[in-house]
Amino acid sequence: MIYCLFALVDDRMSIKGAHLLIYLSSHRMFIRSLLLFCLFAQMVGAQTNPAIDSVTTNPHWEEQLCRQYGGDEYGMKSYFFVLLKTGPNQNADPSLIREAFKGHLENINRLVETDQLIVAGPFDRNTKNYRGLFIFDKVASEAALRELLQTDPAIQQGLLEAEVFSWYGSAALPAYLPISDKIWKKKP
Image (tube, rainbow, N blue to C red; front, side, top):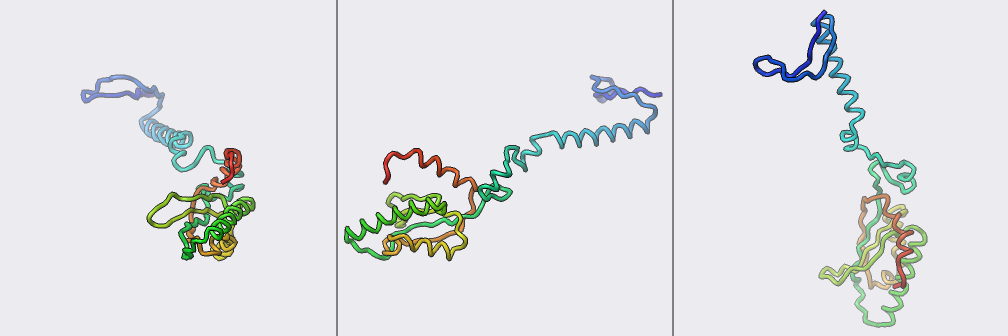
């Protein structure tokens, strides 16, 4: 029988420190045991090392919540992103503008209530004549969205013009809506 001391050895073959004592019956058994030990250690290490697994999977992932919001395996989904620009109608009639934008805000609220419009807001003045943005959810197609946009009086009157883009973003985006309804004091 052979006792084998698994140790750190310097270039003069003197022992610096012992790490593992293995009882072996032959050299062949030692090599097999060492290979099996290394293989086992690698398998156990890969299965229990959260640093390796967390690179590709989220330990906080909730499948039901992901499905509730329509997310894919990345927690993302497709939306429609709409840039609103100054339209071709440059009419300066204050009553027309006031009524069209009153209807614009009412239409925004209606679309939010139907869970189709999840983000809306104006831009500051800019050189590109961008006026605001919309992000739509639960709209079947771009054609359906374009029909929906025509329910906006400011777009109908040509005061605003819409550019539509398909956008891939976080499926959790609609989750902010219940909170946003609790933090405003005055309606715009």
